[in-house]
Every structure is written in C-alpha cells, then in structure tokens.
Length: 202
Image (cartoon, rainbow, N blue to C red; front, side):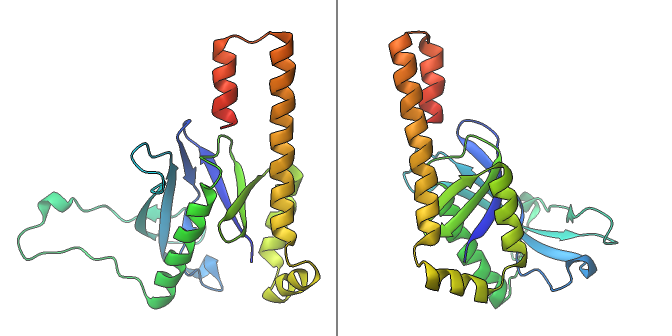
C-alpha cells in the first residue's frame, strides 16, 4: 500500500516531516492524548545511511477543537541515581514505528527533498515527490482507499506504482538535462547559477 508524507524543506540539507500519529483511533476527534513520531530527513556528512533523525512525543489537548501540544519536556540532567524516564509503546505502536522508520529512509533514496510537498512511498524502498493536482488526487485516494482497492490495482498491474514513480523521475531528469544543455549552449549562467542547478539536481 502507498503511504503519503508531507515534507517541508528547512535547508539544502534538511527537511521536516509532518508529525506521524502512532496507532490513531477510529475516531481521532475523540482522542485527548496521542503518541507521535517527529522526524527530520538530514543529509548526514558522517554517514551514507543514517539520514533520519527522530523523536517520540506524548501530546495532549483538552478538546478536539484545540491544537495538539507536546507534554512539557523533562530535563534528563535532573535525573538522580536510580530514576528513569519512560515513554512506553504498545505492540501495535512499536510495529508502526518500525514500518514508518523503514519508509522514512525510503524518502531519502533520491536525496533530501528541496521543495515542500507530498512524498509518496509507492513501493518499499522507493519514493517520489508529488505536487499540485497529482498530490491532491493521491491524498484523496489514500484517505478513502481500502486494502481491497490496492489488491485490485496490484492484480491489474503489479508494478503500477513503481512504473508511475520511475516515469515521473525520468521526466524530471530529462527536464534537468534539457535545462543543462540549453544554458551550456547559451553560456548565460554564472557560477552561482550552476551551483544552484547541481544542488537541485544532485
């Protein structure tokens, strides 16, 4: 099944992922507490694989109309000998955390996103940036689709999501090549322009 993540670029080397609710209830509006995964995608100069930073948060609210708030943090420096701080997860939350981390690493497979938008993990280990109308359509499908729909789509075309993601990726790369050739021939870019181009098309 495809999973969509809203991502906000915070620098050339970092991007913030929208908070992920671990095991949301059937009626989210009725919930007054929740556990979330807060993740950041980072271009880690010290590792070729460790590109996700994550923290777990316990949040609360008094009514469904109020925004979620992080429970006040406790300074671990104040811990005394024999004391500890725990944030327990049940089995379902732990399993979801494992799956979410796996998919978050897939979001970095093509580098850190340079633009704000929705990233869709269409197949394990693969992700594609989706914007505009396509993002809205995919988000709508994700919100209403059942497992039966994904099973049916998979039966019709087993590699559908992979094909769509790769097609989009090829289009973006072809467009970058055309832009490269155009400005190389026109000789109208200065060094800063080329640097921006290569940072955006790494």
